[in-house]
Length: 409
Ligand code: SF4
Image 1 (cartoon, rainbow, N blue to C red):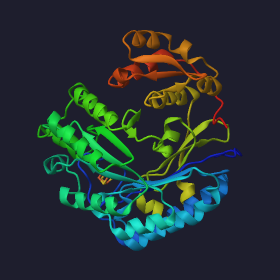
Image 2: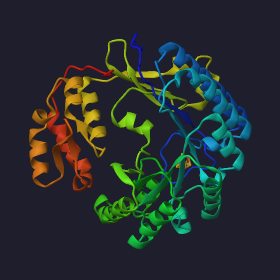
Image 3: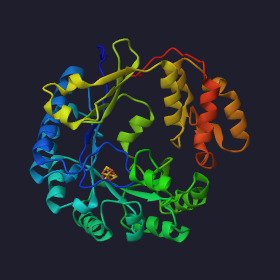
């Protein structure tokens, strides 16, 4: 399916589909209570697939690896070490230039000193820690699979033993959460001094226990309008403490942005490994193509060639252009208009004239120069209405079928 294209850079995402228990709000592909033997087969095949993929694509370099899930540190110590050592051995020939970013997601309640030492020894230089809230009541309300005490224990271990970059996740906009409580959560998070904070408003995803509770009337979700004022306040607090707002939900200390996710937002190619993971690669026709690993750990574990199980979808240039807009406008720098023209052969200011005019008048969108480059970006006021702006943009470009030149080298 993939052509002869030689990737100058290929970030790798590795999905570990296991969790201790499922959280009530979560729609990621992950399962609880999977027996250890099946987990071992999945990890074994995951390393096989990574090796096959690197051999098949031979990227010039892998700039970042992100191991997420699921809960990577819910694996047994032996499997966790097998995974990290296996990835390290396979990736080493491709991490030929700096900066190289290797992130592993850790659930705080499962962190051990041994995990931290092993990660450091193996060259992992960033961890991402899902805390979500510092309120026991809030954690229970969203059915988080960890309590506050064990979360705080994990954070104490990070403070003591981890010196490198790290991210802390917080969810806000919870039912009954007062502004003061939301503010306290973010201030407590800042108190741990992570280099990066991801701040999400709670969304009710389909087919989750929270969605069932909303339908049954026992959980009242807040609307985007309800959370807008709280979010604005929390954004301000983060900025006051030296965190740069660089994507709708992401804040970083200077030079501490998550480089892996920046590749996604710029719609660069990447490879996803493991049950449920997705890749965006170049097809044999030179078009962007999405490869989905099926949501089926049994199939994945039993396959002698997990690479062969991928489900491919070639993207229409118009579909890819819409995704490019949606991702680019989530970021604070926005979309580089010259890069857009090189990929799609179109002038973004011309194809979005009405959307830009209308929202620029209200101070929600702006076309502006940074040094010699021109960007289309959403302002802070616009970010609160991002879905609305994107819907309008999608309508305006409907029917345009561009040529495409992707990925740019
Ligand atoms: S730990 Fe993370 S991946 Fe697992 S169920 Fe909770 S939110 Fe989902």
